[in-house]
Amino acid sequence: MNSAHHGIWILAEQSQGRIDSVSYELLARGRVLADKRKHPLTAVILGANLPDSELQQLIARGADRVLHASAAELAIFSPEPYSACLCALIKEEKPEIMLAAATSSGRTVMPYIAGKLRLGLTADCTDLDIEADSGLLLQTRPAAGGNIMATIKTPTERPQMATVRPHSSRPAEPKPGRQGEIRRWEPPAALLGSRVRRVSFEKAPDERGIQDAEVVIAIGRGIKKAENMSLPRKLAELLDAAVGASREAVDRGWVPYPSQVGLSGKTVSPKVYLAAGISGAVQHLAGMQTSDTIIAINTDPEAPIFQYSELAICGDLFTILPLLAEKIEASRKQS
Amino acid sequence: MNILVLIKQVPESQATRMDESTGTLVREAANSVINPLDLHALECALILREQSAATVNIDCLSMGPLAAVSVLKEAIALGADQGYLLSDRKFAGSDTWCTAKTLAAAIAKIGSYDLILCGERATDGETGQTGPALAAMLDLPVLTYASAIKRSADAWQVRRMLEDGYETVETTGPAVVCILKEASVPRLPTLAGKRRARAAECRIINAEELGIDPADTGLNASPTRVVSIFRPNHLKQSERLSALDPAGAEQAVDKIIAIFRQKGVL
Ligand SMILES: Cc1cc2nc3c(=O)[nH]c(=O)nc-3n(C[C@H](O)[C@H](O)[C@H](O)COP(=O)(O)OP(=O)(O)OC[C@H]3O[C@@H](n4cnc5c(N)ncnc54)[C@H](O)[C@@H]3O)c2cc1C
Ligand SMILES: Nc1ncnc2c1ncn2[C@@H]1O[C@H](COP(=O)(O)O)[C@@H](O)[C@H]1O
Image 1 (cartoon, rainbow over the protein chains, first blue to last red):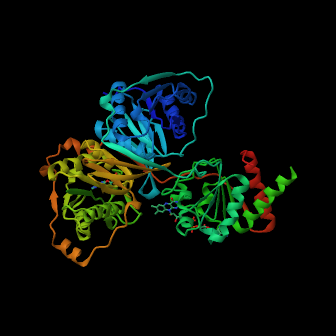
Image 2: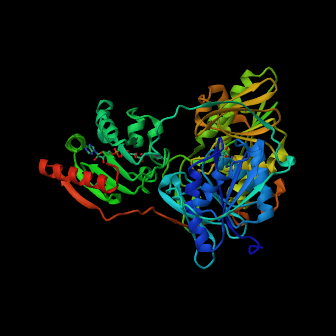
Image 3: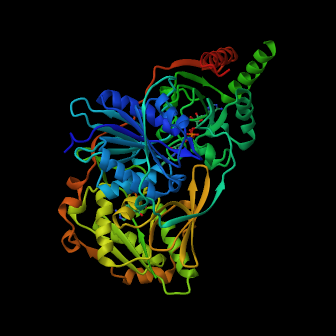
């Protein structure tokens, strides 16, 4: 039964005909699995007639094949036509593994497909691997409030399905000149019906999110009060960085919720994560430990965050942060 | 009109124990409560009833150990009409596919609903997969991430929270809607409600009565298997600096700047 299934799929996402960068994170994940399994990597993308130039992006970043289901009804995400088209493609091509992003659409369509096709599905994975002897997909996700990691397998049902936490890995870089095949598919009308009608859409104001920043200055309860937030804000401005926060700082109203990092906030993986006045609770670590370099500033030499940092500074953030801003400004003036 | 609210019993504290041999949560260990988002779903149902000119019947359905009767009674105290509990050892260890399948079998048996509400996710499993999987099995549309729901003419109108904004969608027939925290503010039970709950009889349904195929429910039927659980370990070889005196602080700041330069962010 299993041997009939072959190939690794990622479900790419687009908005207004442009590929979303979360697709490139999935390609990075999928490429590793495809190489280990020695299977081709296919990026499946639904939309309304995306141009080849856009689809080529998926190939440049690691897909061997692009499978584009194209119809006006697929321009924006809608669970019924998306799932009907994907179910049809899965039945026809029989992939072995299918990954989607744990976004509002991925977390809707994947369980809908799993429900229809009797498939196993693991939500919000932060780590994926192939088990050496069995070739099975190992799906690891935080469980029990982040205190525990659980690794999950799907022994028999195919494809093995998982949603992957956005920003839990880096997007694949483009390799110009990489070759791949593009298959365009126009689904029959019977697959495109929906009982749900979109009435309107209000776009949220665009703000530079903490998930896009190369540097995150993260603040915890150690900052003590709202007025002190000018310290990290100034530093963030100097570095074109974003300000992140622990839940303690968010719950006290010092930093808005969209900037919360951790299990019940966002996952970030910037080049540098500077945590000041944060103890390093597991729930906080769940949202930042994939950062490239972690620097921690804490007065408590026993703070758990130190064990997860490349640079552990036992010191007072009220001394270090202003001094850091001062030195950066001074070095700028010199050059 | 009939509304069904799906209610899961979850451990109150975050200090959940896991059974290392089966990889499942030990539910008896902690004090159990209604999954917080299910309270928001129930509140949406109660508000829809208050706003409706027609009679609205609100049923609650839960799958879990016998002790889960208490969360159904709590729902009745808040205003629900009837509680159904699916309880049987044969259901134990179900993953989200099997849970949805068992709930779907029960819904086919107990009634026909114009609206099925569930929480966006439960605090224990945190998968958020049950609602959409159930909708697929019942062949109903699913509206996830609902931050508001109302009846508009003869349609359910739902505001959905997406990554880049809010979308409003409508559907006329029955649907499964997964509720977010911002959809409502749960009320407190009244004294009369508590009295009613005490007197209420919840219907308990076992596997045999449900007539579900053993191949569709419980640990062994579940497509997914937890194979290991471990404590997260991302310990690093840290370079440690003491910056409690001015010289130490200078040195620490220079080191931070060196890292910024090395990473190309300064
Ligand atoms: C289900 C669940 C989900 C959660 N989700 C999240 C989440 O998404 N994100 C999150 O962050 N937390 C989350 N938490 C909360 C988490 O458990 C911790 O309570 C929280 O991360 C602690 O925040 P903190 O480090 O700012 O505060 P504390 O733990 O109080 O630490 C403050 C630190 O500041 C240091 N400090 C004090 N003064 C100074 C100074 N002058 N200079 C330098 N250091 C100083 C102290 O030594 C201390 O280490 C969650 C908890 C649960 C149960
Ligand atoms: N055992 C259960 N009994 C009743 N409802 C459930 C059960 N499991 C999940 N649900 C519903 O599905 C929602 C999402 O749960 P989950 O998929 O476990 O995160 C919950 O908020 C409940 O409304």
